[in-house]
Amino acid sequence: MARINLLAALIFIFFVVTIVNATEVSNEICDNYSKSQVDSLISAEVERQVDDQLITLKIKEVASETLEKYVTIENNLLALLALVISIVVVFVPLYINRRHEKLIDEKLKENQEAVNTHIKISKHDIKEQVEEGLQKLDKSYEKFKEDLIAQQEYTILLIRALNNDNEDIKLNFLNEIIKRYEKNWFVASAYNCRGNVFFHKIDYERAILDYTKAIEKDSSFADAYYNRGNAYTSIDKYMMALSDYAKAMEINPDAIDYYISRGNAYLKKGDNNLAIEDYTKVLQTTSDNSDVYLARGLAFSQNGNYHEAVVDYTKAIEINPNEIKYYIARGNALSIIKEYDYAIDDYTKATELDSEYGEAYRLRGIVYNIVGKTNKAKADFKKAANLGFHVE
Image 1 (cartoon, one colour):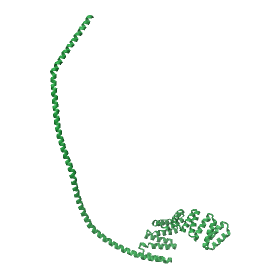
Image 2: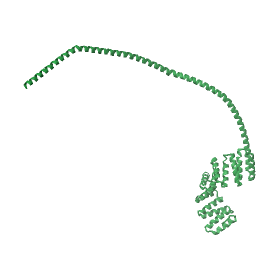
Image 3: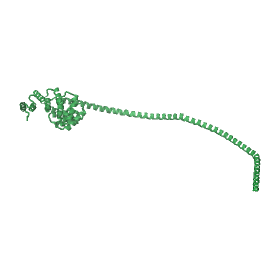
Image 4: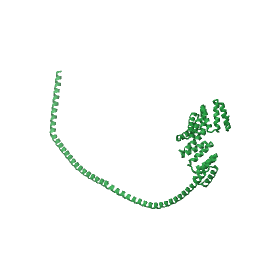
């Protein structure tokens, strides 16, 4: 065992010594290589770096020269471009203006030539037009002069005809005037006047024919529409009458008579509210028309508004206290609302205004009978019968 350990120790020592010798040999070789090669390597590296620096310097020199040339060229190009732009900015507008002025001058010259030509033609045309206009004016003047003379003669004849109180003589005059001036528009007034004569004769159909003829001659003849409306109302053709009144009002909206007549047509037709509207419009304009108060009172009565009717009848009596029909109308309304004493007073006033008015006696007799005054009632009925009024 001891031998074995000794042998192992010897072997270990030998191994260590061998390694140390090998290390020293290696170090020696390395030292020898560094000395022989390092100088060569350093010299080559130095030369390479110098060459690189020279090359870099050369490149920078060449680049600097190239940059200077480029900058010079660029500056020259910019200067050239600036010059070109200056030329364009300055000279092109001048060229355009000169060209534009030339075109304007040419256009003005053309226009002036056209104007001169047109003036020459216009002078000739105007001269012809003036001459033609003067000829037409002369003809118009002659026609106007003839129409004026004809109208003057017509007016004189029409006044003479209307001044006749005899309806038949007046009608004959109007017939001659219409025959003589049939072709003239102003003959419309003669037709209207002849229509009025027929209306007064209660010949409503012939009156309507003449009013229609007047309208055909002059479609703006408001009174012809109004008069024809009255004729239609008289024969109970209320819709046609209302149409004519509306046309008359359209032409002359301020004519109070038109509203009165239309109110009367509404009243006869039974359109009491519309009648009241027309009568009220009239009374807003003129408050002293007693007949309109009477008419509105009748419309109120037909609507059953007897107290309003009494107010209107009273107003009519205040305006015209000597009209029998106002007392009769108020007496009737008072009878209906059982104001018998006041009704008797109104009928009595009517007999005082006209002792021969039998209707007043008959109506008073009815009220006397209602209040039990039979003797007075009999006396009134007898008086009414003697005057030709029927008593039931």
